Amino acid sequence: MSDYKYSIEAKNVNKIFYKKSSQTNALDNFNIRIKKGSIHGLLGPNGAGKSTFINILGGLVKKNSGTVSICGLNIDSFSKQSKFKIGIVPQELNIDPFFSPNELLELQAGLYGIPKKERKTETILKNVGLHEQKNAYARTLSGGMRRRLLVAKALVHSPEMLILDEPTAGVDVELRRSLWNYIKRINDEGTTICLTTHYLEEAEELCDNITIINNGKILTDDTKQNLLNTISNKTVSFSLITKIKIPEILNKYKPILQGKKLILNYDKDIVSLKKIIDILNSNNIEFKEINTFESDLEDVFIKLIKKK
Ligand SMILES: Nc1ncnc2c1ncn2[C@@H]1O[C@H](COP(=O)(O)OP(=O)(O)OP(=O)(O)O)[C@@H](O)[C@H]1O
Ligand SMILES: [Mg+2]
Image 1 (cartoon, rainbow, N blue to C red):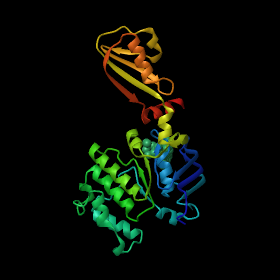
Image 2: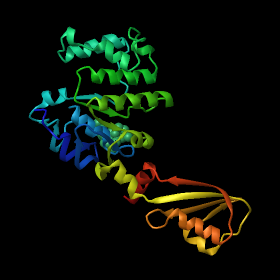
Image 3: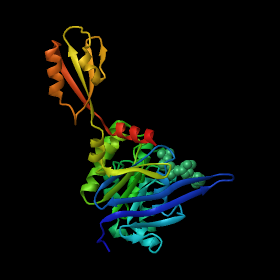
Image 4: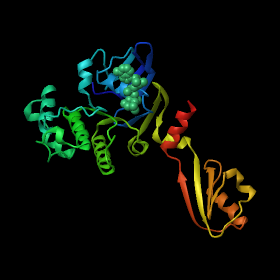
């Protein structure tokens, strides 16, 4: 049963939410494959359908049509078994305020029928940095601590896959880094990860593969590297020694002159930086410093969302 290639495989999934006079196609012929062992990012603007898909995986939302399997198990035929394979960290911080982290994890372990001897409450709490607070009421925990508690709760039954719906929303920079490291670590130890995020640098830092969706439809689905390669624009800025007038030959590089700073844009697949430097040299433009900037995932994202 553990012989599967994709931790998640969804084909032609549709989900329609009916309201009084309208309907929302939250997922519209949605297809995705998440490779076992990978870190997969599900990105898209507000209302794109990310949480709807995650809620279908968790059994909280019923799809209208299509097939979904988790670790090779069809969720309709193996509803309970497939749920055991995943741990979900929900977008909402829904924690019972009157339980302590320790009680909450014990309760969750009980729900999964894990015998007391086999429970890993202590280890998990240490790993997510909540050991000191293990007996504090959850209502006294900060937002970041609650999020870590939800991660802990999702890991109680040692799932093969961890799904995180906006794991670092509202989390400070330092804690975000420590959550990233933890996510990477459990992935290295063999857990497949799927996460949604609005922080594109988070996706860039963590993900092997990325699916971008909008209005329930797939806009693109590729490796992170391929996505980054689709944008070959680079920017170079020169700190000039003296003020200049921009020579016409530079016009094709969309020049911007800010005092003694000259900014040029070029396509790295077509033009080399050396060629640009040669042009400056042959026009007697002297500079003391060069800085280049690569496009990032944010550029890819904005380009795709705008196109649609
Ligand atoms: N229970 C519901 N009843 C009615 N409409 C819903 C329900 N849940 C989601 N929707 C609608 O489905 C669409 C997709 O919502 P979803 O929560 O999946 O988006 P999302 O990608 O997770 O967005 P966000 O980034 O804001 O979390 C939205 O238009 C939303 O209003
Ligand atoms: Mg959401």
